[in-house]
Length: 216
Image (cartoon, rainbow, N blue to C red; front, side):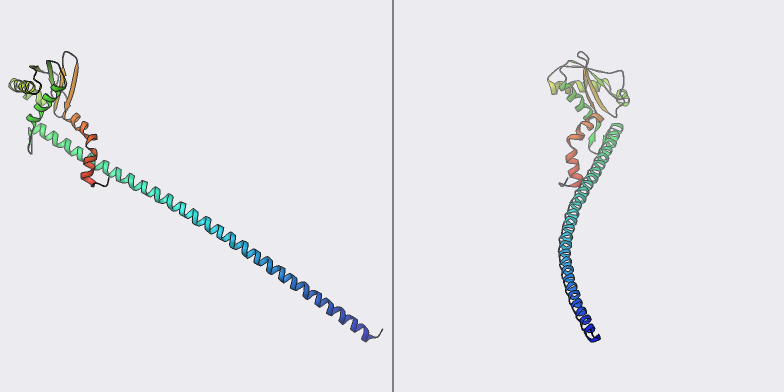
């Protein structure tokens, strides 16, 4: 075979090889493009899924933070209200202390309040022998004439002719009275502190409204 024939055969082989290589490369590119497209679609789906989950998580986290913030704000508001209410009652207690010590505070007269507390305590008890327990200062200044005046008030309020006596043991409260039924061993605590504490819970909402308005 001549050199020319050999060259023709080699050229034919090379052409065929190039064609096959070109076809292989084309298929490879096509498959690669398909793979890329599929990958892009999967990546997009996965991306959307991740983004959706992130949005959902962010929404839930936002709701959680908002709920916790509302709770914290409400708690702080309640704490502020409680402090303000406590301060109001502390101030009221100071007013009662001054009232008991001075006998008068603004338009209030301590004697009138004390006598009313004696009468209201006597109304609750049904005995005819009642003992009045006062604090140390009131025990010293409560005369027999005042005792008779208190007895007349009790009779007017209850319709009963009761016997009133003073306890020999003074109490430690700010003012007011503890009325005791000496026969039945029962008593009514009408001391100023007890009456104030008794009122505290019942008027707590009203005090809060005064301090903070209707939005409590």
